[in-house]
Image (cartoon, rainbow, N blue to C red; front, side, top):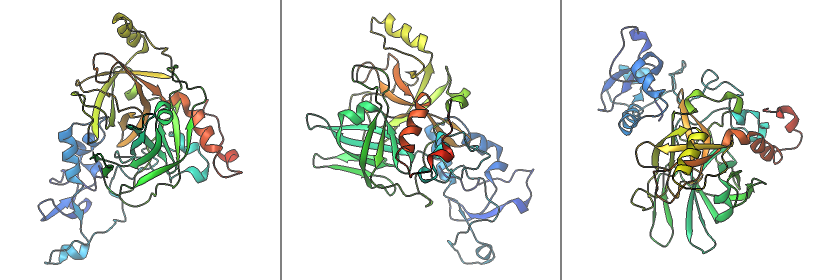
Length: 376
């Protein structure tokens, strides 16, 4: 959600000099103020997760259009826009004040693997992963764009699916049996140059379920509607909002509660629980408890709709100061649509060195030493 300014009211602490003329949703003249000056809207924007109603409310705000000074003085309607010299507070424009340099894993990559230090405020980094399995049947997974050239997902998707096609910033999709139709802003199919699976992953092992997909062509960035990578926070920068008892968000195109694959990007809110509690629940149900350790994250359903089959690779995220941070990748659960038992995800922060090593080794020569600091 890109918020250009907060409409409707001028707070008493602001003077008219702080305001800017805008074209409102009703296509009438209005006054806008920086989002930082509107505490109710800023508080809503900074929440870890928001409801559908709140999402729609914030999305509506972005439709206000700043007007040039000349258009304010003119009696004729104008659609001319401008970039103010003093930046309006826009969460999509990430600054060092919001995400300090070095807080995201990507900041430690070689220069040719970076993307300008900006990170995702919206979910455009989400990737619909399509492929075929050994039976030549279509399968689907989820990935996250972490650099212009790399998508992060789980190993079992990368290993089990062939003929991979990726769609960054996909929203709706349809499959009439003759091929997928993907709908979203500027969505184009992306093809995979290399599949990089963790060396210690096996189908019989519950660990190391993580993979990188290197794209044949970089995802362009810099345009107003470009997708930006999701931040992978460093292990030592673990956030309180992602700890036990807190809510995390995910999305995907997996099965719904009726067991039908979703044709729209579905958002899910889950609660993180401790590994001990996770083991107790599974063992209490006479289920074989997986080998859970610090490389695992366990979550349980809050609303009844969980990360069911087809959500594999989906990010477990929290939102801080308008920016998304990914801490986990949906790995496996009990049954295809079971919301009674925990889902186990890969703890991305435990694989930071692995991610860096794989990307660094494929970057330009002579650039690793400049950024090759250890995360440990």
